[in-house]
Length: 353
Image (cartoon, rainbow, N blue to C red):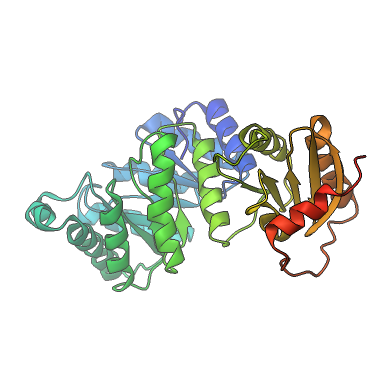
C-alpha cells in the first residue's frame, strides 16, 4: 500500500513504479478525501499494475473511484454508511465488472461484537466478516475476497483457519500493524507463512512501519522460503559460530549486496567451515567457502577451483555471469554423499590459481 498523499499524483505514481520494480503485483491507495478520488483516473492511467482504492466511511468516494477506473475497491460494509450505501457500491462494481475486498480488522470490530471479542477475538473477526459476506450475497454479489487481520499473530492464524473452513471465497492474508521491519517482518512471516503452508490464502500484504518497498521485499522472501514463487537469487549462508575463522558474516553481506542486482533465480551458498558447508553448496547453483588466505568456488555441487581470498567474491560473480550468459544450464545431479570434512579436504588439495 502506498504511503503518499494519493492526490499527489507524481509522488504516488513514482511510489507505485518503485513498488512494481520491487515485485509488487497489486497496489492499494488510500482515498480518504474527494481530492484523492479525483486523482485516481490519472494514477490508474500511469500505473503499471492494478490499483485498488481503499475507502472507509464514504460510499460516494467508492463510487467515484469505480468511475475513475480502479481495478478493485476495498470497503468495510459496516462503516460505509448502511446497507443502502453498500448496495450502491455493489451495483457500481457489478456494472464496472470489478471485485471488492471486504473483511474485518482486530482494531475496528463492530460494537455489537465487543462481548464476543472479549471472549475470543478470532471468533469475533470471523463473525464480523461473515456478516459482510451475508450482506453481499443478499445483494447477489460474490466477486470479492475477505481479510480477517489482527496484530496478534496466533489470533490472525486461528481466524483465517476458521474462516477458510466456512467460505469458498478468496482470502487476503496479513498481520495488521505488524511494526517496524525488525519485528514486523518476523510476525508477518510467521502469520502469513503458516497459513500459506496450510494452503490458505490467495493474496498477501506485509504491513510494516517502513517504506512500502520493504513490505514487498519481505513478502517475496516469504513466498520464496515456502517454494511458492521464484524471483531473484536465494542466498544460503552459514550462521555465525565459533568455528568461523573466515568472517562469513562479511562475506555473506557483500554477496547479498551484489546479488540484489540480479533478477534471475538461482542459489548461492556462502560457507564458513567444513561441517555443513560442502553439503549446502551441493544443493546450491554456486557457492564459496572462505579460508584465512584462500577460498573455494563451487558450482552445481562441484569444486571449481581455489583462489586467493581477496578475489573470492569477484571470481564467484565472474562464474555466475558466465553461466547466465550461457543460458543458465543446470546439470542433473544429486546431493553429494561424501562426508563434509572429506569434501573440504579434497577441495584444499586443489592448486591455487
